[in-house]
Each structure stands twice: as structure tokens, then as C-alpha cells.
Length: 311
Image 1: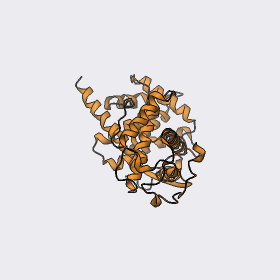
Image 2: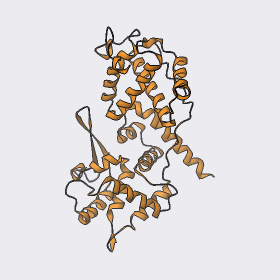
Image 3: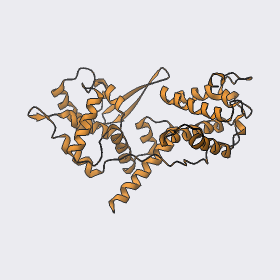
Image 4: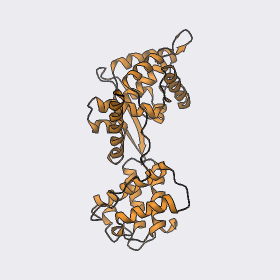
């Protein structure tokens, strides 16, 4: 069926051509184009397209988009989760709900449908667990632990540089591995920057994240010790994961310290420090669509930290 999704009479050529009578399947290519412009990865777009193909399999790809009601989408989710005969993990279920919300919100924004039928739908299987994050005490303990890592008789500065970099920037594992020496902008030492580059739809983009003087001083000690020629880190990202894990173990953190934990920790620390939410979103490199769910999780994690203080 998926091979037929783009074969419709009056196929819209642009998003502006979509109207309430447009068939569901006729919108998929333009929805994919929208996702690419939003900076979604090829893997995310492929997953979202698969989710929409499943809706088309359930309802009929020729169904006009305006005919979808909230009750129809809830019935589809019930079929997908309980009656389709294929196991559906909580993570997959949550992503498919997100796909519906992004898709119909996009159509409503185009004024192609009069209301958004996906807005009221619920995650009936429950939300995915919130990430662990470091408390301020644990941050200090991890910094102390990273300073105890050795290279011969001396401190191995790599662990502390890695930990502090992730704490300041919240960048992903892949971004950390690609970071080059030239990506550290020292033109203003009162406000040094990390330049994080990524490619979206064959266009290179970048975001600039503030560092601090203390980090630059530490980075120079690391450079003297490890002498990286191009990339900041001379080892693989897997080895960087091992280093984070060891830091967490030495600091007796009660969960595995990972790039994901550091990313959430950085975001939650910024939120609790009163940083503007739009600045946090830009720092993490998220679209406004992705930020809706992420910001809610950040707030819930922050509330959890407040609650744990009094337990």
C-alpha cells in the first residue's frame, strides 16, 4: 500500500495546495519536506513516514484529511497497540502519538483543517520514564572524581574537560566526537564559545554555546597533555562513554553517567537558573516542535528534584 501513497488525483505540489479534501496519503511527501526544514534527521523522518503509513493502512490513504476526528485517532491507537497483532513498545507508542500531534498541528497551521484532532489524544500507555539528572552535590562530586583520573603520575585532564564541556553545553555524543579545535572560539575571552555544526537538508548550520574562562584554561592544559591535531578528543566516542561511566562510578552516582544524562542535566540546570526557555532550546539545537515535549520533561525533572530535597 505504501507504494501507492503518492499516486493521487490533484496531488498538491506545495503545502499551500493542501485543503480539507486532500487525501491523507497525498500529503506525506510535503510533510516530509516540512520535517526536513525543521531540521529533523533522516532517521526521524523515516520513522515519522512509517508512522503515517501505518495510519493510512488502518484508515485508507485516500481518506480526506478533514474527516479525521479525535475518536478516529484514538480508535487507531487502540488498534495499533492492542489489536494489530504486532507488539508495540511504550517508546514506539509514544513516538506514534507524537507523529500524529506534529502532523495534524502542521495541517492546522496551514489552515487546511478547521481544528486539530490530535491535540486531545492521550498517551494511554503512559509517558516514557524521565531521565536521571545530577544534583548540584553530585556535579561537584563528579568534578572532584574527574580530577582524580590519572595519566601516569599526573591528572588526566581529558575526563574533567569532557565532563565540564557537557555540563556547559549539553551537546550530544556525536557532536562531541565531531568537535574540532577550531570550533572553540576564543576571539572574546570574556565570552568564549563552542561552535556546534550540523548538516540539515544539505545545508550546514551552526549554533554557538557559551563556555567560560575556567573551561578555556582547563582546555589548554588538556591540549598540552594530549596534543590533539584536529578534533578536540583524540579517542572514539565509545571511549568517551567509558570515561563518563568511570567518573560516575568514582563519584558513587547511583545511576550510569552517560551523554544523555549530561544533556538533561545541563538543560535542567539552565532552567533552574532562570535561563530563557528559547535560549535553552537553541542551545540544545531543538526545533520549536520538539521543544514542546522536551520543555515539559525539563519542568517535571526540576519538580522531581525539588520533591527529593524534602524526602
